[in-house]
Length: 365
Image (cartoon, rainbow, N blue to C red; front, side, top):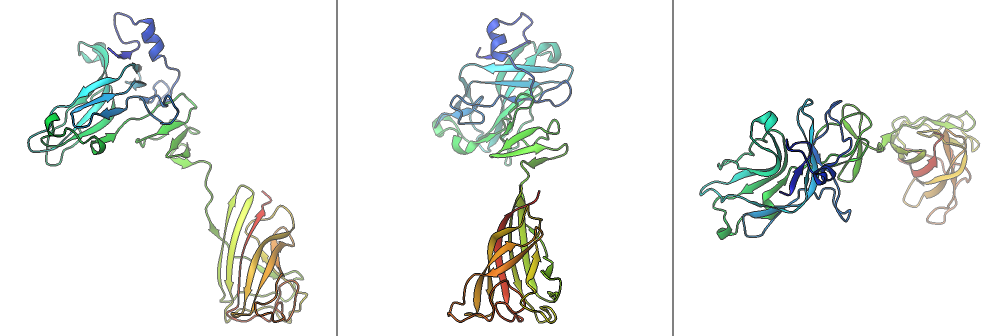
């Protein structure tokens, strides 16, 4: 029989059996138990799980199960049963009920007479036939079994009536198991981890078990809001946002910080008492920079449709940025003042005026 098992037969096992089912230490579920599952991989490296794949024959009630290796865990005291299927295995499903659909369950099952009184010492792939009903349910998984597939058998299905519609009838139930420390490929199960620091791959996203939940790894950064502090480089003529509208957000990935901001001045915004063109505006960074930098981004300054300018953003200190006028107006009109942005540069600011910018810089840590 192509389904082989290790340390099961009372008559001993062949050297081939031992070689085929040989398994190292696998993903634990307790100090002495291992996770049941199929060993992952395929001959060409294309698929996560190729072992024990069910493929139906079009227009029939027949299917085949592909070769593979698996381990089926019993109780802690009984241990785990390594299993290998070395050849393609044919399966034939019973014809459908005359009135209702049913759901059959395909399982990899271990029979061990020493514990279950079955009179058998073998591993087999079995079809557990479900009960036909208006709303069919999946049959219970037998003891010491690893579920492989659910197969919905339509009413009146038979080889003479187009058989089972395999493209829609299958629901995968296979789970994988890997060596301790290996990355577990997840197909359909939602089981928790075995130990903090265990990794799994779910739909291409690596996750780490933290002791209570699976979390994406590395931790993906999320955008956050920040409200910049508005000051001047002289410490005099300090402005105030008042009822200005601010939308300022940033994201930090490692030591790289991306930020964008939009400020629309309001009716109670103040731009500094007795401000001069020496009182250049400073806005605090969301995260301290690694060093001062002459250019981290650009901002658009706006007062009206043709009263606009672009400014270069730079880090005058490691905790703030300032803006230097870089362009004239779209209509070629001359700005009132040039240089760093302040209460009078490039024009005298008023309610409704805007500053919108984006920047990227290296964080201190």
